[in-house]
Length: 130
Image 1 (cartoon, rainbow, N blue to C red):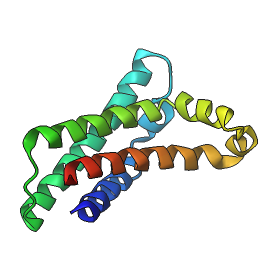
Image 2 (image 1 turned 90 degrees about the horizontal axis):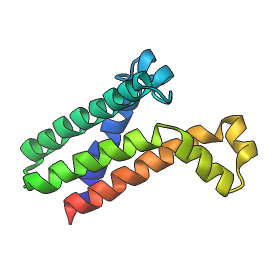
Image 3 (image 1 turned 135 degrees about the vertical axis):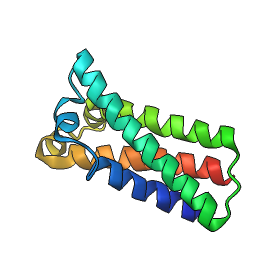
């Protein structure tokens, strides 16, 4: 069950982060303003909605019995971690701490960002499949 859940969550991540993220969200989600937070939380809400739909689909098609409260907790975890990571300063702070400033300025931040998102999804998948 873990592999099925993890795969659907990863697919949901790709769907919500690329085809469903608006230009406005991508450009404004890191701004330290109300508009930045609205863009950020709107993008995170898209993730939660997509993951919720895919988990419901997985339950219907694959016969999963996901308890409601753990499933809601997993969706909250995913939304909160996604919003936090997408503020970009956590990734920048990690890359400074790991002495990756050169890599950060040459495109590495995107890879660290995506790795952090997938790590959060794996935690959710582990909790849901336990």
